[in-house]
Image (cartoon, rainbow, N blue to C red; front, side):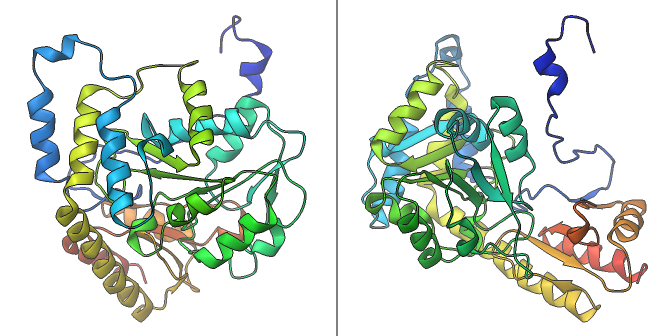
Length: 357
């Protein structure tokens, strides 16, 4: 605290990121990183850029990366073009720009009550009115709860930390009922079991889809995020970006991101690994009495009826296994969010749990 802080800074409630411990021999299953490393083509692309050209500014438009993203989704039949793609320094920055650019309205922003805590943080930072809509009894998003006046809607799909997926038909129903406000679908985990809403972009100008390369493309350490939507929405995001930082993407990130999208075989291999291990881990936990929600993400959200989430998280930590326990709100106090790791990490988790149950 400093006497030079403004009253505004005093009022902020900053986001607390997931723990990044430095313990040795750690089984780290708390922040949903990919168990498989990035594509070898990504590493080579970074090496090729690590030369004297670093003295030069990067392309402020990140054109090669935008072309790679547009090409990837165009090849899937979605008709995406470069002017429908925005990129930024991690999906957090992309989301921060769109909160500022689109959600400062006369009516409240709607998002789930159990979801990313930084949605509320951004609302505080930009002084945006919001209404946190409760998940239903199954801890799932119900579209009917969002059919009311609003200044915008945002939700992760699959939701986090629950991992539950909202089908495209329900997203389309939401879009059709909210033609006068923007709907943002935040797809950090979509590649692990869902269909992207990018398929709907050219039919609904009120849809913006955000994604990250941190999860399914194993680049959490490089910070690359993107948005796909109507070209007019992307133009608005560019106006925000160029009023804040015209060079959010450095040379290494642009090259690495392009390589990650170009190496589709490695991407598919990684997604298949996660899905296979998620199914194995879900079954192993079920056999031990855990009750989990259906997951389309690279994590499981689960609880044990005879043990508190707090005690299990503490017991696992004592054995060098780190999982995420939120504690609040009360509805999810006994749940653990467990990242799907490598086969060896998942086995270590199960062995540690067996000593606690």
